[in-house]
View 1 (cartoon, rainbow over the protein chains, first blue to last red):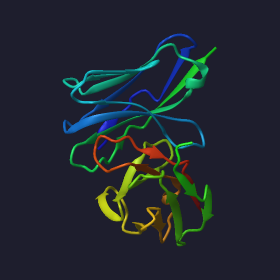
View 2: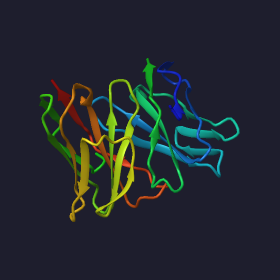
View 3: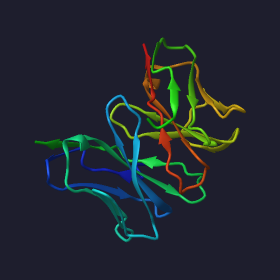
View 4: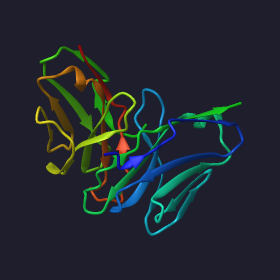
Amino acid sequence: DQQVKQNSPSLSVQEGRISILNCDYTNSMFDYFLWYKKYPAEGPTFLISISSIKDKNEDGRFTVFLNKSAKHLSLHIVPSQPGDSAVYFCAASATGTASKLTFGTGTRLQVTL
Amino acid sequence: DSGVTQTPKHLITATGQRVTLRCSPRSGDLSVYWYQQSLDQGLQFLIQYYNGEERAKGNILERFSAQQFPDLHSELNLSSLELGDSALYFCASSVVGNSYNEQFFGPGTRLTVL
């Protein structure tokens, strides 16, 4: 049972344009959401997070939007840069689960010149 | 560099064998997590330790066990290995063990079972 889903395995975006990565979840107990970026041969790197009391969180070029009613979150990268090319994982946790993270399967972003 | 170290980087072994993966958390982090990533899959949570005590268990097989030592490093023991155990194993750490702390991941150990 995949509680966190990233339905697009890959995405290609031109440099300077906006990248939008999507994530859906099914467990209504999730109240904290994170995005991680992963380069080959490295561990995931924390990017940005949002708690369920907010609907938007911004950090530089990265913005995460949360739509609780739709159980959907998205990561916007503006403007996209070639160094953003990586696999992006969405993850979620629920209060009381000792911060166990449930991950999606990832979206491979390629930013082209 | 996340500050989390994992050894070894690569491990190749045969079915039926036993291996130990080691993780050192970031300085000051009390909580250690283990995750498994099989081919083209997301990371699957295995187990969490907080300050030496087991805190949470995920889809960890009975053939697998872990522990966290007084110096806070952790080891993941995998025994009676099967071909399907071939995967990337990641360790992560966080300051405490509640829901609102981001976890910092090590570079992973790639296990290949032949």
